[in-house]
Length: 58
Image (cartoon, rainbow, N blue to C red; front, side):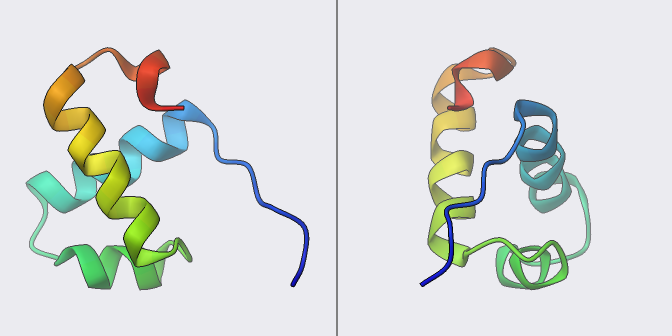
């Protein structure tokens, strides 16, 4: 297992918004952006709770 990757809040927000606004599924976005599917789902859940409070996605 390699080192943990860190994602910026901007990257997380972009990924979440792609899943909410685009024609791609969450699975497709996770594969295209090389993000684990379950992690992207967690970010989406937090985003839906917190809205635009991007700094809270950590």
